[in-house]
Amino acid sequence: MTVRTRFAPSPTGYLHIGGARTALFSYLYARRHGGEFVLRIEDTDRERSTPESVNAILEGMTWLGLDYDEGPFYQTERMTRYREVIDQLLAEGKAYYCYASREELEALRERQMARGEKPRYDRRYRDFTGTPPEGINPVVRFKNPLDGLVVVDDAIRGRVTFRNDELDDLIIARGDGSPTYNLTVVVDDMDMAITHVVRGDDHLNNTPRQVNLYRALDAEPPQFAHLPMIHGPDGAKLSKRHGAVSVVQYRQDGFLPEALLNYLVRLGWSHGDEEIFSSAEMVSLFDLVDVNHSASSINPDKLRWLNQHYMRELPVADVAAELRWHLGHLGIDPDTDGPAPKDIVPAYVDRVHTLVEMAAQARPFYLDAVEPDPTAMQKLDASAAMVIDALQVALDDDQVWGSAETLEAAVKGVAKNLELKLGKVGPVLRLALLGHTSSPGFGVILQLMGRFRSTQRLNAFKDRIGA
Image (tube, rainbow, N blue to C red; front, top):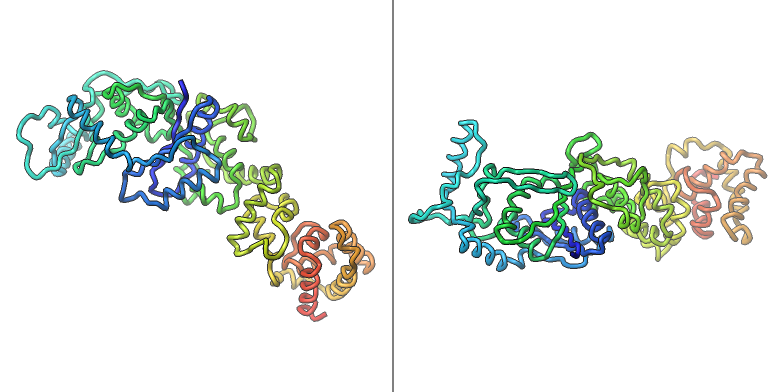
C-alpha cells in the first residue's frame, strides 16, 4: 500500500500556524514512508473563499518548502462527482430528503432544550412516504445507523468510541443542492485514495459520521490522526493577540522557513531531548505515534533562538536571499547602491535574532544620509571634533582600505595617537556613519560602508558638530 496523505485547507483566510503544522506532519509522514502528499483546496464556501486566500496558502506552502506531489485540487471543480454520490445514496436508500423548515427545527430545538435534552434532529422525515410540503427546498440527510458503535483507532489519541444513537442524520446536501463538508471530504479522500488523514482534533466529532459515510459507500476509512490544539504562551486558545498566527506574517516578522519548520515540528512532537532537526532528520525520525496527546503552547523566545541558529548555520547565500526580500520591503534595492546582502549577513548574524532586525540595522548602509541619535549626540564631549579630524586623516590612505583588519587598525591607531580610550573614538565613528552607537567592529562597518560614503558621512558629521 502506498501511503497517501493530504492537506486540505479552506481558502477563507491566510495559512495559519496550526494549518502549517498539520501540513508539515502530513508531509513528513508521507515522505518517511515513501508515499505521496496531496494538496486539496476545500473552497465550497463560496461566500468566504477568495482567490487571495488561495494565493496566500500556496505562497505559504512554497515558502516553507512543503512540496506536494499532486494538486492543488479544488472542490468547486468536483461538484458533478458530489452530486453523483448524493444521488447514489438516495437511490440505495441510504439518504433521504428532509422537508423540515427552519421554523420547525427551531421549535424542535427549543422544546428539547426546555426538557433538558441535547438538541438534535428527530429524524421525522427519515421514513417519510407522504406528499412533500410545498414551498420547501429539501436538504438531503444521510441515514446514520441507529444503533451500534463507531470505533476510531486514532494514531495519536488511541481508540475512541462513539455511539450511533447519539449521532444525527447529518445533512449531506443543502436546500440549494450544494454538498456539505462531511460529504465532500469523504468523497475526495475516497477518490484520491488517501490512506492517512492528519488534522486538528476539532474535527474529531466529525470522524464517526464520516466513517459511517465511508461504510455506506463500501469504502475503507483512512487511518485518522487528530492533532491537539496549539495554545498561546498563556495557555489560552491561540489568537492574534499572541502575535503572528499566519505563515506569511512569520516571514514578514523576519523568520526563516527552516526555523519555522523546526519550531512547528516541535509543537507536539519530540525525539528524545533534541531541539534542532534538519529537513532530512525530520523526514527520517517523524512518526505520528510520537505526537503528544495534550495541547502545545507557542514560545516566541524559542522561535527567536531557533531563527538565530539557522541564520548562523545555513549557507550565507540562503539567508542573504531572505534578507534581500526584507530590504526590498524597506524600499532598498541592494543591487543599486550599498553592500551586497551576503556581506551584511556575517557582520550582523550574531547581533540580531530576526531578518527584520538585520535589515533595520543594515539600512544606514544604503541611505544617502543618516540622522544621528539625539541622546547619543548629547553624550559627546569636546574631543569629538578632534576625533573626526584624526579619523579623516587616517582614513585618507589607500592602504588602510585593503581589508576590515587594516581599517580596524587605523581606527585604533587614532585612539592611540590621540591618547584616548577607544570608548571615546568608537561612538563618534559609529554615530557619524550609522547614526547610532551599536554596531559590529569598526573595520567591518567601514568596509561595508565603502570609502566614498564613509568620507561623505564623516564630512557631514563634522559640519553638524561645528568642528
